[in-house]
Image (cartoon, rainbow over all chains, first blue to last red; front, top):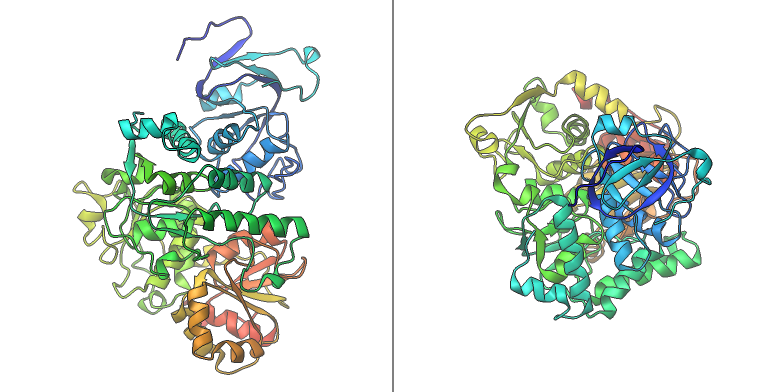
Amino acid sequence: MEVANRSDSTVCIAEVLLAGSARGELLRLDRPISFWGGVDPATGRIIDPRHQQHDCSVAGRILAMERVVGSSSGSSVMMELLAVGKAPAGLITTEPDAILSLGVIVGREMGYGTIPVLVISPAEMLALPQWLELHSDGQITEQDAETNLPNNASA
Amino acid sequence: MRLNSEEQGWFDGDAGPAMQMATRILFDMGRILGADRLIPITSAHIDGCLYHGDSGVKFAEALVEGGAKVCVPTTLNVGGIDLLHPEIINYPQHEKAMARRLMDAYVKMGCRQTWTCAPYQDGHRPEAGTDVAWAESNAVVFVNSVLGARTNRYGDFLDICSAITGRAPHYGLHVPENRRAKILVRTDTISDQLKSRTALYPVIGAWLGRVVGHDVAAIADIPPSVSEDQLKALGASAASSGAVGLFHVIGRTPEALTLEAACGLNGPEVTITFGPDELRSTRDSLSTVVDGALDAVALGSPHYSLAEIDRFEQVRNGRELTIPVYICLSRLVYAILEKSGRLEPMRSAGVHFVTDTCVVVTPIMRKAPGALMTDSGKFAHYTPGNTGYGVVYGAPEECVESAVHGRVVRDEALWK
């Protein structure tokens, strides 16, 4: 991997699992989630009533969560979200995740587009700003809220 | 991550578009998972045949159009439709058609129409020490733990890519040293009587999944007479409450004939205890409803074996059931019951048979709210989120008594 050039707005440099660029508003989950049974594949809404972010939507957000848990059918939910345009704009975890990454990889094969999947440390995750940009070299930079329309993710 | 020359050819498209797509997906995933190469596999079990949305149907049909055929013996997990009784599925028209198209696509690729989450009780039993690519969390944990074959917790998409190419990424539980137990679980404070009962095992499983996550544990002090059905129930529960892919039972499962075999010469890193307190608190945590009237009883996750049906019938002892009892089972077990003339008497007593699928993955029961009782740790885990029903976990005997009376009937003596 190329070493990214730090700039003033650099928050951290992530390990790149799947490269891509995106910008948008952070949605940081307090607890891990299973996409199967936890996220509605038609809308991106978090449907697990026991989850702290219940009723939030992952669509168009930079989704940050420590790790992915639960059913491997989460891959299918991730691809369905890509297919219907309700996927997160980018995904950041603290350990490599196979389940959602697989949904992204297969979605790309099927022509549904792709999103960046990055890994950072738990401390870096806690320090993520509310508006951010993910770069294809793994660099994560802070964005001014004013320069961002809500959910204006660009892949 | 390296490909050999044959695999490189597939990657480049020499074997057609389906092989190319499958190899590309395996290559990308191998890289993410930290695999160094792909390894040959001898069997596959596919979970991707269950409908979650139209994109999965398009993926399977793209493989069919690209000439995909499985190259190892491959069984199919449950689908979204009971193909023998399609009228019981309450999907809207579109979903019903797409769920069936998905199942058809996997059959076209040459998979066996087993439609069961217990393929290991349907003749699909890979040899110990062989590498396989299995999906469906309970089937993964059974094939690893009870049969001693080697697979990771594969899932949708990767399962069929492996079946088509005959390859899987070399990492995780394919590597012998990763199969040793780090954690030793003592159960010596649980009575021998309870250890002979099936109800104990989903509870140990649910506790194990919560405590160890994805780590490998070895359970001690379990009698070697513990049955396959009991180990199946333990594994299914552990794989739904946690991410367990392999457990050992010392003196019983193939890689754990001794403590040293299970944990390695240096012994376990940690020793923990499952005792009466853990039993009670875990058992109670599996229920979201404590008491009162019931709307249904659901059995058979994983699919009920013939022995489990025999036990159900023994406890029922000819009595009528006052609420619907859904028994989910494979076509194979269903056919045996049919041949021996047992289906109709059970039906007229109030049993609803569900083949090819189950009540938690597809709409069969009437709309929530409702209260459902089950003897399955896996059903207990998924029922509230997937069906909206409240759930009561109970021993198989308690489930039958409750179905006869239409309300929760407990027998504390079963838990001593």
